[in-house]
Length: 185
Image (tube, rainbow, N blue to C red; front, top):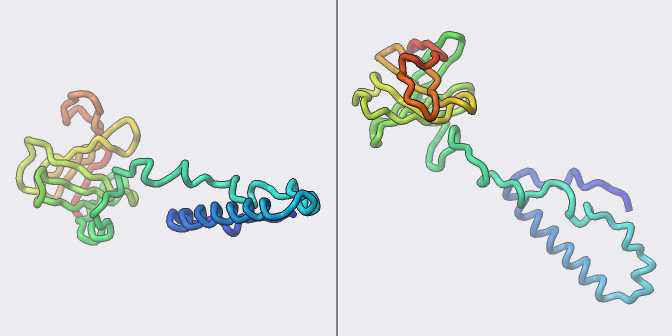
């Protein structure tokens, strides 16, 4: 018996859970069917011709990969509406060429800033010596544009600078590498 179940693969975590339960139930019914017939019938229908994929044993293993098992801290947080951040953000035009959307949240302690860079949202926290005015301050995150640095958003009115943040070090901000010089658009 030859065939492909590629068109039957689940396309979301919800479908995967339903599909896995159905596969287990179908497999249990199939096995129960074996107990009900005698050895002669078993020889006639050729169990060896069944492939594991027909019973859902091969292919993507959704138990080993779940979206909850890895972190999306830099861009996904429960309770955050990313569409609202994008629409409420202030655009900054930056050199070299980039547009960074920024939204500040002064209603929390510590204050936070959300930067939207190339479709990825970065959550930054105001430093202890940051001013209480959201338009003047220094915000940092240990999650950066690459795996080896965090980022620093230093804002002063209509101007801002995005810098690398050296992790596990006390490098002064004025010694960090500038990634973007920005102007509120």
